[in-house]
Image 1 (cartoon, rainbow, N blue to C red):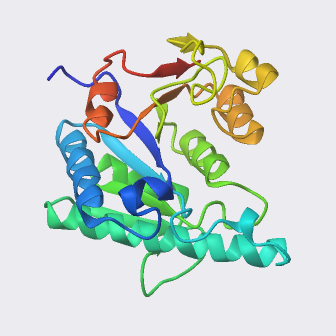
Image 2 (image 1 turned 90 degrees about the horizontal axis):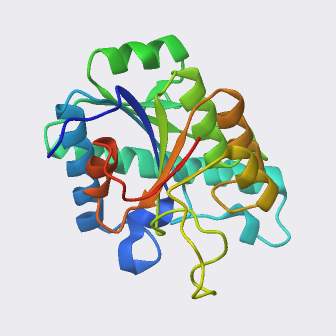
Length: 235
């Protein structure tokens, strides 16, 4: 495999990706393969920070009738569970990890402090950010964009179940065209569905490019880190 082209990466994983074909909860085989890929990337000298969503346990927008703030707080707890599960998978393959939470849970993880997170990365530890921004009304994509800017990541890796950004939904339209590269302004103007507008705007304003690629094969994390053209770059 080629050499990595990035020094520091913020990797965003959806909670659904951890559930595999189950559709709910955590598939330990999938989690193990993702953990192995992240450990390999760290071993190649790349500083890796990770944000995990919580959709495999809880999706606040489906909680009809529930107070939105309460629903979002429950979603933050779901991201904490996924973060601890990913830490366990990384520990099992010999990685050194730290979970930093935007909401204090001192029995389980460290509180998020930017300088501490950067120091962990500089020491070669894999850092997992839990509980989003610690505030309701913000998605985990927005939290990941914020953390990417704060730690001065070279790039934001968005690992999804789609292999890139298309001009329209490839699941609905056979003539959908995939972009190799696309600008932030076009993503926002055409609502291309890369991520929510707040997250995309944060990355644009802080000059953090986004790589969108498929997580169906976790080895794609390594391929994208080495510059292989397997997804879409938003810059």
